[in-house]
Image (cartoon, rainbow, N blue to C red):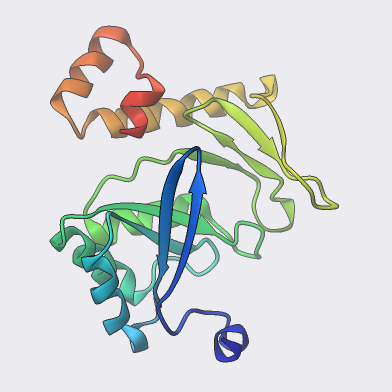
Length: 189
């Protein structure tokens, strides 16, 4: 809607459907602004999963904890996504810490950003162990192995992710303690 473009935020619920790898998905986009708090309630009644989109620049906002709690009350799993990593003052780690404090839940970071603000160039997928760099002129991300100069930071971030995931389920924790790592399936389930 023109008003949404002007405000640069969602003010009414909308739907988008698509298929990927033979599976049909429907995305329900609801407002995150507290002035439109009634919109997500109905959407969550029809959803299987919720995604909290958080600004890496502005951090966790007032409605974040409410939206998280509402999703959990509906029995829905929740994923958080930090956007605006290329914005001034973007801070991925601060967002994760704020989210943990506001929800009381341990955050398992699945990505490690490569820079922030004007220096943001992409991310490392901690699960697939691949680097995604965005060309300055746009276009598709360049995918590569984790560079040697980032290997130590990657390994620390990967270990933190695996430990956060292992804490959630006793069977997964047991596999982690026996094998020293987790498979992609263990992390993504």
